[in-house]
Image (cartoon, rainbow, N blue to C red):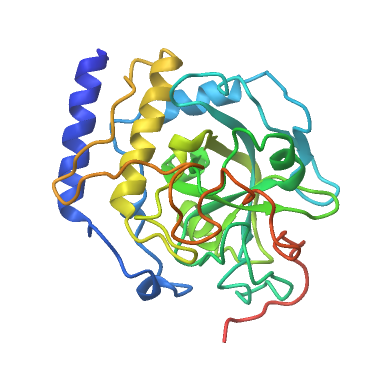
Length: 311
């Protein structure tokens, strides 16, 4: 597909989707186990070459330090790859793992999660409202220069779920012993696998989910679209995600991409992403200072024990 044709289709698709989605949301309205934001709020544009990106991730081979972790206690291992980390646009780490449910933050008492933590690394995110992913703390510590809190992430669900791509943010780290890969928020997990009734003690066990987390200050979701509990503008998340994935696709010579600038939707214009140098709406947002150091109790714990319903 010619690059200009892809860019035109992407812009048109975003404009059409923008008219169907709310520009801004009141996050508390979606802070419910079965009432989170609909998938269309954070699903990638239909113009994104999802299958090709998924195949490219499966071929990644460059292994940085502190990159291999089990996907569960005593289970198979997953490796975070850095093949894409050196790109000037669309730079990212990628890995393939299972998907367990992380409810740390505002919904730490979700079903099956009696030992959840009250905070996530850069706030107290709502696992019911925010599609976020989790990275091992050791890998975060080794890559603080490029791996930023609240950075845009993309998740490609398993082929059994039609290989759909959804956008979220890098919102929490895993500090278990051993540390593991393959965790995402309640919303992300249940959106990827709606038929599996996932919860804090029941994850998707197959290692067939592709995770992509973008790097650098320009990949950080701006505070105009995110506060310490909720995403407040999903149009911004989608536009940034499509732009970053488009640039990645171009770098991978997948016939799509082009490093598209943030698209002006029919409902809103996209603000400049914030990094370490701008003003911060709350201390945990600007991840370029000391905010990659989580609070002592912010690491995820292993989900065990009987199911526990949110009160």
